[in-house]
Length: 284
Image (tube, rainbow, N blue to C red; front, side, top):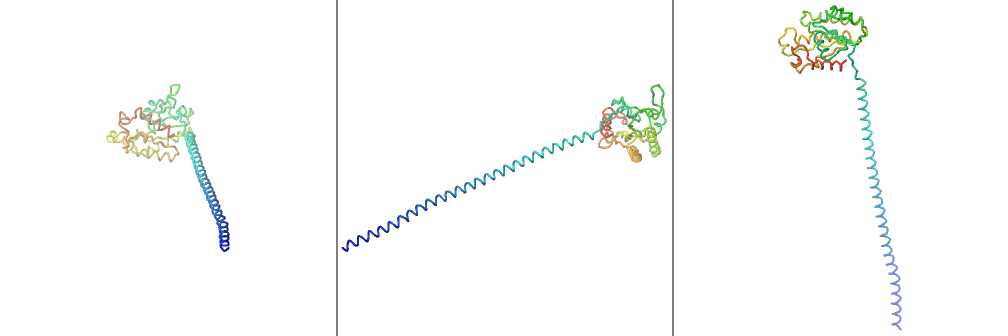
């Protein structure tokens, strides 16, 4: 009897243990499964977040790249437009200088060489060997259509001249009083303005001589020429006419007319006459 009771108690205890342990095992298994799912879902979420972050970074970088490219293109366009505008402005500022029958050249044998070597056939040629600022006013050396000879002022009066280039001074370098040179030069300009009030007058610097002439000639030398050119500059400022520094376009680094530019050290040959004319075109 006692043995049966003990067997019944063991069976009851065994049943209680099974009923307790099995649910616990089931809970553990379920917890593990749920935990893995949660972990996996976290990984998926994290991966999605990372992917979205990376995509956003790529999008931002692409956007920045696109923006930079647009800015570069805009800057390139602006740069091109600025260059085009500068070219237009340069073309507008560049004058179309014409040496036609409305232009007059007054000068000595150096000016004769310029006209001859550069083919200035349409201009009014008032050049003459040995011409000076005083003889330019009164000397009758200009031939008219009827064969008469008149002064350049008389001839100019009857022509439609709007521009005058003057180069005088090399024959006056031996004058005892340089101030007289300036006075007579002023008189010539004023006489021209009397008959042509609206004329444009350009006074050109006296061209220096070669080193050989400079070192051997008492009067025709570059020191004397510089002094006379200073007087011409003063006159240009006083009378409001334009001074053209032709000498700067023809001399070498030492300030001399190059030996290859002249056969006699004073008169300018063809190549340098072309440089002279180019300077006039660019500075008139």
